Image 1 (cartoon, rainbow, N blue to C red):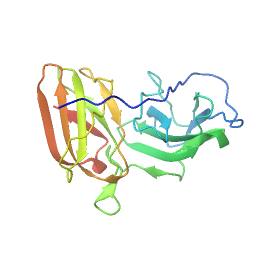
Image 2: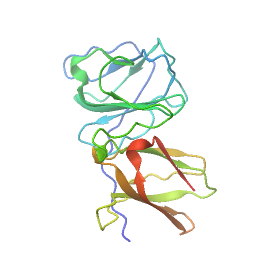
Image 3: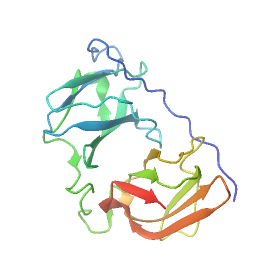
Amino acid sequence: MPRRGAPVLALLLAAPAAPALAQGGDPSFNLVNRSGTVIQELYVSSAQVQSWGGDLLGRDVLPSGRSYPVRLPQGQCVNDLRVVYEGGRSEERRGVDTCRLNEVVFGEPAGRSAGPGGGRGPAQSGETGNPSFNLVNRSNRTIQVLRASPSAENSWGEDRLGNEVVPPGGRFAVRLPLGDCTYDLRVEYDDRGAEERRGVNLCNLADVTFP
């Protein structure tokens, strides 16, 4: 089963710097948390990129009522954003022109919030929604390959990890297109072992844990 090359990932840097001005093609902004809950993870990627990339908060967290400066490459204006709250609940904003904003606020009526209990809530139609999730490796082996394809398809498709791996105890944010909720998943470990899950409704999950 050949492994495809990884898509080019946008370089995203978050650093405690002064607030960035949203003008002149500068997409940097302040993330503001008004949710009443701690934000534990932040992912920002160009809307043209298929991977979320790394957690921009790193070891930091963002308590409610606080802000965090996010630095992005010049000219990368249209971005998708994802935050993961304490407890696993997640919220996303798609196609945000951050070059026109000084602040992006989570916790106010904008975008779609995840449902309680760590999931995203059921898809509105019962069949489609947001299937993106966090892959969590609870095994003692490194996950080298992740394949995720809608259950209606006959092919596993590309390796969703690209050039990344998920070590024991690690996690990886997997970005999937809005639409189908029911996916088949396959992970391949560094010892050539593999594990599969069939017919998983990802729209109701924030985390998928192997094994």
